[in-house]
Image (cartoon, rainbow, N blue to C red):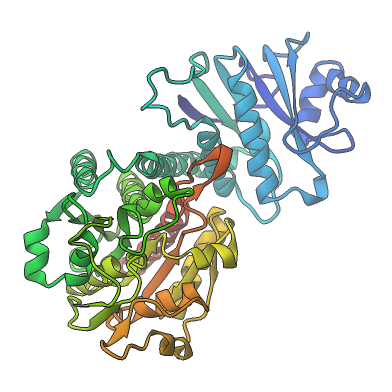
Length: 507
């Protein structure tokens, strides 16, 4: 579909469908009032007849009215005007997109992007409109013998704004939103694939494809290379699988030569049975999503490369399966990590931290500006935060605040949990430097405490996305999170880099 920005009033813009908003209590939005005046108050009359109440997400399609340039007018409910905020805005955009797709319209003019959203500017509104629209349009049916029929009529969608002064910012935001949406689509597509297709080898192949199409550098380490590096904790996880592990390194070199890179590390367990500590059978199919951290890192790199962000960014993906086998790791086994620290594996289902700890040691060689790891790490995080916020833990307060702010800006929120020294005691082992689990209490925190022992040499943050990476039930599927959060974090860093470069030139 072709997307564009338009700066034209609704009574003059020709389209096959104009989209305007209605608040509860039958109150037309500002743009809807302007349109209403040009068609002899037909919208007001419709509301007075009780055909629509403005409930959030409701829609009413009106066919061509005398005086209207648009062939159709789609009214979208906005809910209570005083309560109209981030969530209501995204809900209204998504509802409009779904309903528009059910019509015979070939193009749409969406005036919801001209609504007032508290404390949000045009850049935010356009970006979020793109993401909500693409979310509503997304389908994952490539493996069906008869894919669902998609709307092939709708070819173009315009996001409309009233202020000419906002035009340049809106066009930039549109390009950014489309780049982020493409990154999310990649993360979703990879996450939704089953484990028999999306293996570590498949992930490595997709990384190479992405590198070729977006001018990234890529390197893939095999088992032999990992053995030479001493990545024994990572290799202990792959021991029970016939699929070979892969260690993927991707580089986006957009920053100044010599500037320190931002490193993103994504957990890439392409299927997690729990190993010898076998998971219950119910919903085990969803463990194909255990590589969502890896998928989000690849999606974020795609977005960053598409936007040509002036940053050096490195994506690192330790990829493996975790399966039971005669060669699989057993509870009580002790392995020596790449860092030289020894780990007693008390539970083979706590495997994510085992692949991540070697990756976190490996990235020291890049002398990073900061490191953010992303992982579907603990069920405890789902209990703590549900499916709304990702868990955030960090050894650097400034980095944590950057990520929290990015999450708020991107509507992909995180919530910080403590990383106090007191929790480290739960990882004590009688036989090794540490155990890989710390008991049921504070499971998300002790998992991060384990990782923190491998991040002493740089600023580090950990995102636990176990509750936010996918949806279960009827709407089962990958969410593409936290690509929006990570991309906003990078956009903010890129802005800082640009401002610093500008100051340097003025001097």
